Structures are given as C-alpha cells and as structure tokens.
Figure 1: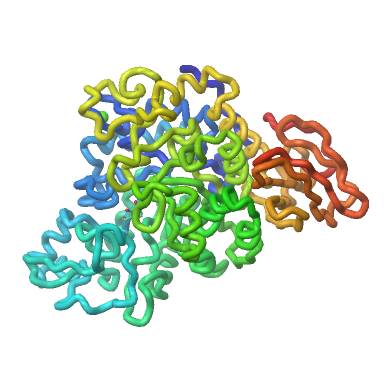
Figure 2: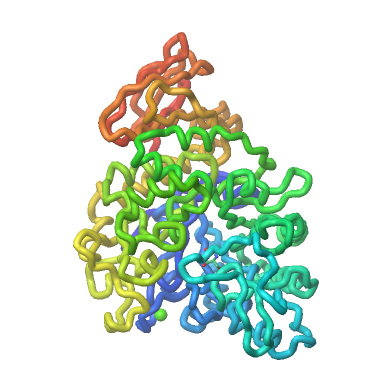
Amino acid sequence: MSFTAPIQLPGLTLDPQWYRRSVFYEVMVRSFVDSNGDGAGDLQGLIGKLDYLQWLGIDALWLPPFYNSPLKDGGYDVSDFRSILPEFGTLDEFKDLVTKAHERNMRIVIDYPLNHTSDQHDWFQQSRSDPTGPFGDYYVWRDNDEEYANIRIIFVDTEESNWTFDSVRRQFFFHRFFSHQPDLNFENAGVREAVFDTVRYWMDLGVDGIRLDAIPYLFESEAGNGEGEPETHDFIKELREMVDRNYPGRILIAEANQWPREVAAFFGTDEEPECHMAFDFPVMPRIFYALRSQHAGELISVLSETLDIPKGAGWGVFLRNHDELTLEMVSEEYRQAMYGWYAYDPRMRSNIGIRRRLAPLLDNSRAELELVHALLFSLPGSPFLYYGDEIGMGDNIWLPDRDSSRTPMQWTPDRNAGFSTADPGKLFLPVVQSLVYHYNLINVESQLAQSRSLLHWVRNVIHVRKAHPTFGLGEITVLPTSHESVLAFVRSYAGSGTQFGDSPENVLCVFSFAHNPVSATIDLADFAGSSTWDLFGGAEFPTVSEEGVLTVTLGTQSFYWLHLGTPSGVGGRP
Ligand code: NOJ
Ligand code: CA
C-alpha cells in the first residue's frame, strides 16, 4: 500500500492547542495488527500501520491500556503501571512508536486507569497480606460492607455490591468496577504521589497526553455519591498544575460518564483548570436518538445548553468506543426507546448500554453513516474515531461482554483479514465472518480500491474539516429551523489561518434526521444577504434572504456544510 504525503497545516506542530484541531483515533493494540503471528496485535504491528493512519488524516492516537495485566477487563485491570504487556512488545518498541508517530506529526495519548488496579498488582497483594505494611492503606478496606450505600454499582451485569470480602485480610475492599479491580485509596498520600510519578514516567517517555480513566471515582464520601467529590477535583487541579509546569503542551483527558454540568466540571475553571479535554458523553446518545426518532429536539437542547468552560478546554466527541454505548445518563423512557431501536436482541445489551459497533447500529446504512460522521466532524470539540469504524466494520454479539466490538481489524480479504498470519483458531478473538460484515467484504484493501467507499468518504470529510479551523476552534450558535427533524448551527471562528484568508469564518451546518426528503427554513438573522458555498465541492448555493431566512431542501438523512459569506476562493478539498 502506498499513501500520499500528508497535508501540513500551518502551526499544528507547535500549536499548544493542537488537541482542539486534532482528529483522534482510538486503537486497541491487541486488535489492530499482529506482527509476529502469535494471534494478538502488538506495538510493532501498530507502528507498521502509522502510514495508513497518517493517510487517513489522523493527528493523534489514543491507546487503551497496554500495561501488564491479567486482561480480565481489556487491560483496564493493570498489574504494573510502568510495564508493557509482553504480548504487546517492549518499552523500546513503545519509545519507537512515539518517535515514529512524532515523525509523522501524530501524537500519542495513553490511557491511565488510575482509580483502581488489578487484584494481581503487587500493591494489592501486599496490602491484603500485610495490613500494617507500606501498602496496607493503599486500598479502601473496611470491616463491613455498609459504607457508601449511596454509591451506584456500574457493572450491574456482573457485580452485586461495590464491596468484596477478601479471605486473606479478612476485610472488605471497595471497588467501583469488577471485584478483581480494587479501588485505590486516594486519601493515602503515597497513592497520590505514586499517581504523579506514573504520569511523569510516561510523559518523560514522550507521550502527548493521558486519558484519565474513570476520573470521577477517585474519592468516596458518605454524604456524596462518589462521583466528582470535591477532593477528586482538588487532586486533578494539582495534577494539571504539575503537567502544565513540567510538560507544557501535553494534555489530560477526562473520562467522566456523567450529566453535562458534572462532565464540564472536569475542565475546572480559567483560574484553576483541570482537564484539557473531556469526552462528550451527554451528546453521544442523543445523536443516536435523533436518527431513529427523526427529531432534532434532544440534540438542540443539549447543544444549546450554555456550559461555562475555561478558554482552551475542548470536548472529545465520539460515536463509539471500546465500551458499550452507554445509556446511563438518559431518562428511563429514553433508554427504553433506545433499547427498542438499537438492542432488540437482549444479547446486544451490556450493563446499562448497547455493545454494538457503529455500522451494525445503523443497519449499515450509508446515508446514516455519512450523516453521523458529518455531525461528529462539525460539533464543537475534537472527533474521536474508533478503529475499524472508518470502514464500517461489524461486530460479533456472540462474544462475551464488550469483546463484541473489539475484534481484529479487517485489512484484507485474506486469512484472518490480514490481521495475523496465525492459525485462525489461535487468534485472541475471531475475525468477523457474519453475512453482512464478513472480512471478505469489509476490509481496508477493498475500500482503498473503491473511490466511493466509506473509507475514502471518511478520509475526505476529515480533510475538509482540517482545512477549516472553525470546526476545532470556533463557537457554535444553534439556529431555529421550521422542521422538527432538522438541526442547524453556525460554527464561527474569528481567527486566522483559514483558506479564506484572515477574515472570520462562518460555516452553516444543516442536518436532516427525517426518513424522507424535507424542506426547511433556517433563521439566519445575523447573516442576512450572505452568499452560501458548499464546503465539499465549492458550488454556490442560494443566498440568505434580506430578511435573514434560508430555505433548504434536504434528501433523506442528509446534510450540508455551507460557507457563509463571499469567499475569495472556495472548494473543500485541500
Ligand atoms: C472505563 C473503561 O473505558 C472501561 O473499558 C473499563 O472497563 C472501566 N473504565 C474500568 O476500568
Ligand atoms: Ca503479536
């Protein structure tokens, strides 16, 4: 495979706000490429595909945990935070990955499950056997299981309590997730220092950012619900202060699956910042809701909610990731509707969510795949793609838990989808061989060979987005429209660096969730008389009327990105 040279955007390399203009890609090392034929993906395999990712337009990779681990929770059960799981490679190979990514102007963000460890971690082994020793207080031990009754259970499919009795120490330990994942005791100064040391360790190795896994749950209290307690925010502020001081330009990303205001709290304030980015959990399920309900209202209200976030803070928007599509932060009525539409087979459910990949969720509808990607790439924040979704990979709901959507990447129609040369029976998970998503049909090689494939479409939309800084840096104004299925907003950026020169850039984004063609009027009072130009092909569209109204007709589940104003040169393709 050969790929064309990347587009160099001015200022990206040194831009301290690089993360706001970046397109991120979540890549599970184990699932991507197996370089040594042992049946599991590894760092060397990933290094070999950096050219592909660069060609696609990816600016930053997010690597879920690759540390030593019994792998009972996809690696989020860490037994040594400073090591590389031997199956994945060596520390030298990790350093090589960082170097080779940086050579391609691509950043590396790692994942740090700081809230808990595996029960195989040496700290826990020592803590349970030596209560008065140096690690005796590293976990949350109690004589009974009565404390923190207000704290919800997250893994409702497998856990009955947040407390588990340990037969060695003869006490209960606290855990927010699996009972093999004891929570660290953040009241203990040694734990807090160890977390700082781990962050320094990886930043010294050159990583550009850290996803703070399960960040709301660090501290517990009897009065609160153990999610975003004040002590947790104080701790993150200190961590941010250390990172800004010692590693300027590196970022912290909050994984906080909470209601909008609570998620936004993880950005901190201008004076006391916390994370640079936070995943936009509130927006994600509402995108799927809009698709099936044909109503834009839920999205409009969440996007119109004004959340006071610090300058420079950025949302991480996503459609899918390695977890279930979580429905924890929606109302019961809404959740039932989502289950009815997207998880009609009980096997598709997991905890409080849906364990399916993007393409099967959307019934492999090309129109819907394009519509949701267009939304993803134009909403405020930086888009996070999940590996394989760029080719519309399928899932396997017969596999347990979230393995359903962690199957090997499909590169070619050859053995094991080109993922591995191993005996097929040896693969860590089987490749998808379902009727619609079989790797014979859905793979990178064949999509590269078809100019109208989803892969080429996604690559093109990424490059159009990257040519317009307003998507990463601009404000959003949600606009009234005459049709309940239509969402319209303007992204506005007053800065420079656009292909339209130094003048402000305003892009009108219109999406129709209707299952039939519709016509709608959009209230564009601030842009009365403006011309409109399609960002993809550069064609001129109707002018906004002198009264500030634009009438658009939209095909079934379609969208427009329109430049507002009179550009000196147009055309989306950079
Ligand atoms: C959040 C991660 O995304 C998920 O995969 C994991 O199971 C939990 N944290 C527990 O670490
Ligand atoms: Ca391997």
